[in-house]
Length: 116
Image (cartoon, rainbow, N blue to C red):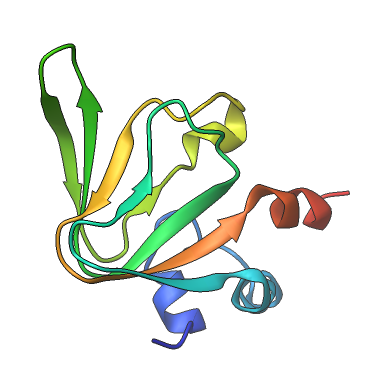
């Protein structure tokens, strides 16, 4: 699925960005596909990117001592992993595709380079 400025403008985090910044995001964002049941990230893992769901559904869950507990179900336009950019800590929850899902991945390294 192509990354477009029109799609990015629909994402709350990017809706007020100028055209030049949207074009930069299109260049640095990587397209990523997850199959249903595939894990995007796990709790405790290093947070090195944020993700935007283009198509599909991702469940955010935390694991208790006995079982996993769903925290959120996210769909098209939702952002995952942005909290770690403001406070670089390990992931606090896990994320799994509930159906085949297309995402954008934007590394924190790229974001940092843009603001140097």
